[in-house]
Amino acid sequence: MTATPPDFTIGIEEEYLLVDLDSCALAEAPKALMQACVDDLGGQVTPEFLQCQIEVGTRVCATVSEAREDLRRLRATVAKHARAHGLAPIAVSCHPFADWKEQHHTDKDRYNELEQALAGVARRLLICGMHVHVAVPDADQRIDLMAQMAYFLPHLLAMSSSSPFWQGTDTGLASYRLTVFDNLPRTGLPPRFNSWSDYQRSVGALVDMDLIEDATKIWWDLRPSARFPTLETRICDVSPRLDHALSIAALVQCLTRMLWRLARLNQRWRIYDSFLVGENRWRAQRYGTTGGLIDFGRKAVVPFPELLEELITLLEADAAALGCLDELNGARDVIANGTSAERQRATHANALAGGQDADGAMRAVIGSLIEEYNADL
Image (cartoon, rainbow, N blue to C red):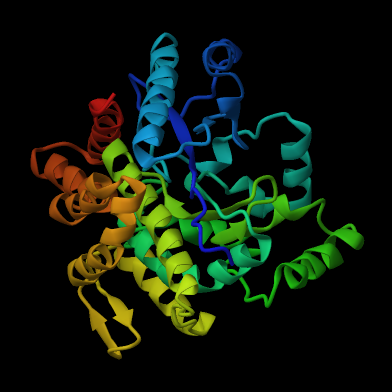
C-alpha cells in the first residue's frame, strides 16, 4: 500500500417515491416528468424498478460539501418538475400506507428480467435506499476494507432508519425496508474474502453458470461496485432531511479513510463474525438509535448516543483531512431530533391526538416528509 492516501472521492445515489399532492397516495411518474428531469439532469436521473420511483446520483465529488451542492440540485430539480404534475418526491424508504400489490414495475428489459427471475419477491420491492460510493483504487484494498467496514454497517442503518410503517401499519421496526430487501438472494452482510481474486472467483462461478449476469446482481449491504473503483455502502434507508443524508455520507467517507489510515500503520479494525455483527444489524433494524448496539470489546449493549460520540472522536482527524468536520459533527442532530422513523411516529401520534382519523394521520406523515424534503432546497 502506498503512503499517499487516495482521494476518497464520493458519490451518492438516492431513490425517491412520488406522491400525489392532494391524496398523498403513490403516483406513477408521467413520461413528461421523466423527460423534463432527464433534459435538466442527463444521466444523473433514471427511472427505478417501480413506476412510482425515481433515482438520482451525484457526480463524482471531491468532498461532501461538493456532494451537498449536487444532491441539493438533484432534489430540487426533481421536486420542481414533479410539482408541475401535481406530485411531490419524498426521500423515505417505505411509503407509510401504500399497498405494494397496486404498484407496477417499469417496462425496461433489466426490470422485466428482474421481475421474472425473482417473482413475488421482486413485486414486494416498494422500498427505496441510499447508496454511498467512496473511491478505493486498489482492488485488494477494497476487499480488505470491506471486511473491516462491515462492523459499522449497523451504526449507519440505525442513523438512517426511515421506514417504520408498511401498508398503514406501524411495524414496530425502525427500518422495515430491510425485512423486504432481505428476501432477495445475495443480500445481507458481505461474505469475507481473502483477496480481490478470491472475490472474483466466487462471483465468476455464478456468472459462468448463467445464474447472474454480472456483479450488479449482488446486493450486499456493502460491496465492491461493479461499475466503479469504489466501495459501495448500501445498507442505509433514505434520509428525508438533506443534512442528515450528508452526515451519513460523511461518516462513510471518514470510516473508509480511517480504516485506510490504520492499514498504513500496520493496524486494522478487528473483524467479528457475521453472526455477531448481524445481531447489531437486527438491533439497528428494530430500534434505530433508541435501543443501543453491542460493543463487542466491552461485551455490553451501549446507548447509541455514547457510541456516536466515540465514533465522532475516532473520525475527527479524517474529517479534518477530508474537509467534512461540519457534516461529521452534524450527525449529532440525528440524536437530538430523532431519526426519520422516530419523527414519523411522533407526527402520526400527534395527528391522532389532535383528532385525525387513521387515514388523516397517515396523510399527516406524508405531509411532514414532503416538508422535510423541501426544507433545505
